[in-house]
Amino acid sequence: MTEPKPSILVVEDEPKLRRLLELQLADEGFRARAVDNAESGLQLAGKEPFDLVVSDYKLPGMTGVELLHALKRINANLPVVIMTAYGTVEAAVEAMKAGASDYVLKPFSLAELVLVIRKELAARELRDENRALREALGKRYEYNNVVAQSGKMQAVLALVERVAATNATVLLGGESGVGKDLIARAIHEHSQRASGPFVKINSTAIPENLLESELFGYEKGAFSGATTSKPGKFELADKGTLFLDEIGDVPPATQVKLLRVLQDREFERLGGTRTIKVDVRLIAATNRDLRAAIEEGAFREDLYYRLNVVAIDIPPLREHKEDIPALANFFLEKFARESNQPVRTLKPEALRKLIDYHWPGNVRELENIVTRAATLAANAVLDAGDIHFDSESSSRRSGASLSPVLPPGMTIEKWEEEMIREALRQANGNKSQAARALGLSRNALRYRLSKMGVPDPDDAAEPAQ
Ligand SMILES: Nc1ncnc2c1ncn2[C@@H]1O[C@H](COP(=O)(O)OP(=O)(O)O)[C@@H](O)[C@H]1O
Ligand SMILES: [Mg+2]
Image 1: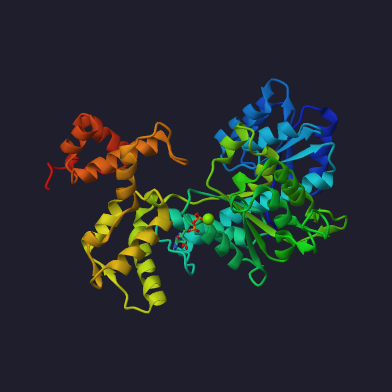
Image 2: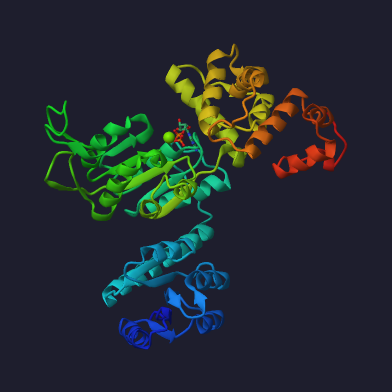
């Protein structure tokens, strides 16, 4: 049985190039259809199931972005490779933002284009296969040290599994304490580099003037105080994984150097002339919105695209509360092991209290609170009274001197949510009382609660408490 040939739609207004592509792609074993304008391309894509589109970016009558959006509306999973003129990398970046899978810069060789096409087709196949397999087996991902019972965390592990097998650069996103470090290590440990080093560097923990020498190393005499030469983290991570934590805080000059290493896989030590090549898989993490940082000019867009080959966003704990019971037990067992004590358990009321909390500090905060409760509790079974939240005391403290500026990482919406939860807590869950304390009508409070995704038992029956 012969495999069906992958079908490719070519959209190119320049007649010679269009004809050439049509013929040469056919030679390469693809089924190619070519049209000379965006309009006909869209019509054809709506009628026939193509595996991939190769399109010029500058077409008469429609901008490349418009064409991409229209194609994505027809089929969101259709890979689109953009051809754009040399020297217009901005256009390529714009196209990637609009959903293009990859781009080639004109003039390109056929070999180059075919390489990109095959890569995209393989990636798509892998995605489909993976999904089909998992659905068929109902597979669940089990990782040591990672609690992931919820659908959202299973989805994270599914991505980890897929990306671990490759050398692709990974960008981990998520608030502080969600598990970015943990997931970075999981990727390393499930990769072919697992026997190699895992090296971490945190850009906020290192003074700006030392960051580059830490990353790239230095030669003797590179600066005053450099009495010996020293390899940097990139060299130390050779054949392994380099984890760049808090990438959003890397200063601009260092961003340029990182970009070069990502592009060429080579660099020099500070004060050195020898070019060093390394074989390193890079994982970067950030708790900042890098897109916003790009808009503000604080982060290089080209570096962003180099890092963001695969993005894994780890949800905040309040969005996967199903994991709280297993996480709490996991931390209680860990505490028992480390302190050589019998494992403590949670009364249902204590667990309830953990589940009802909004977890601004995510899993890290849960770990702290559970561990503290286990340390201080008098009994082996923890009660609700043994659970003390950080923000109970801190919000009381900050309440005295309410600052008009939100703390870092806080948004008006999150702040409002915290206020509402705090008011409810102080009113022991009585909504009328909480609404009064907030200066809201009961309906206004209920509206806000439904927006926050807090189920309203009153919808079904009158309060039973
Ligand atoms: N899904 C999880 N299962 C078990 N432990 C977790 C999980 N997520 C986070 N942790 C633990 O919570 C703490 C904070 O996680 P960390 O990876 O340092 O977060 P981040 O790097 O995002 O700030 C660590 O001790 C980590 O092991
Ligand atoms: Mg971290």
